[in-house]
Amino acid sequence: MNRQSQNPILRDKGEFTKFQILFEVMRNQPHVKQKDISDAIGITIQAVSKYFKKLMKEGLLESGSERADYRLTPKALEKLREDIKYLERYVTSIKREMKVEHYFPAMATKPIKKGEKVGLTVKKGILYAVASSNPESEAFGIATTDASRGEDVGLKDLQGKLKMKQGKIVIVKLPSIKQGGSRAVDVAKVRAFYEEFQPDRIGVMGAVGRAILNKLGLKAEIEFGISRAAALAASRGLNVFVLVVGRMVNRVIEEIDATNMKSAVDIIYEVKDGRIT
Image (tube, rainbow, N blue to C red; front, side, top):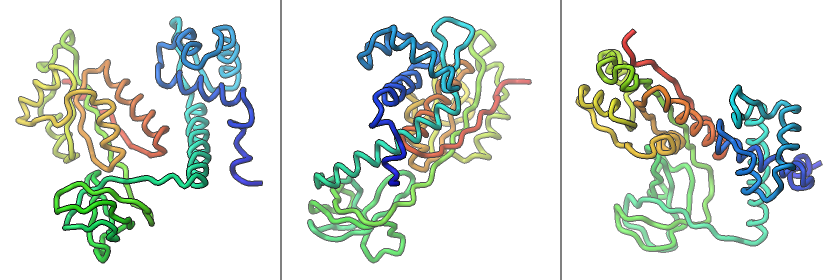
């Protein structure tokens, strides 16, 4: 039996609907409205309600104490990962049959001629085109354009596999303004977290985090949309140091979990308490 026949997501309409509902819950948890899911995937609210009951019975969905409070279980996250991997393999096989050609952008480290075979390497999340004889080359491609050193170059017919290691995210939990703001932060402790981690990027959300960076004499490279940006940076091998107030910690974690699932990566994160104890 081949691998494609082992996953029923495309053979069973009910299984695909489950996949859609779980994905919508993941995108909106913990405040999930069944009407929003109904609108998003094109089935009735009554049908959504029935699926919610099935998913809870199967241990894929759990409800909280408040109305419209739903979350995916670890079992559901694993199921979504497997379903997405299957769909990706299926789409890849279709593209292969259709001979769809992909171009990949990279930064040229030397003058490159169109049609030249170049080596590829990844450094701090950025793809570089190097000489094909370069011992650091992890994969190879064919240049689609001429490029000077420092310019972007398109690549096709990639061969080999790039070793894209995942980075780590350290999330420092800070007190809100009501809890004392930056005056309730153990600055020396946060500095120790930073020096021990030695991150590639710093992300900050809110006035409290910015005040702490001022006290540390540091600057943030990521200030807006940091949940998504931090997860993407880590998925490309960068270590990210994030300063957020307590209520925002879960949002960052949810984005990391979503990126792990959607991109089939394994970003490790750690939450540290920066408050005075």
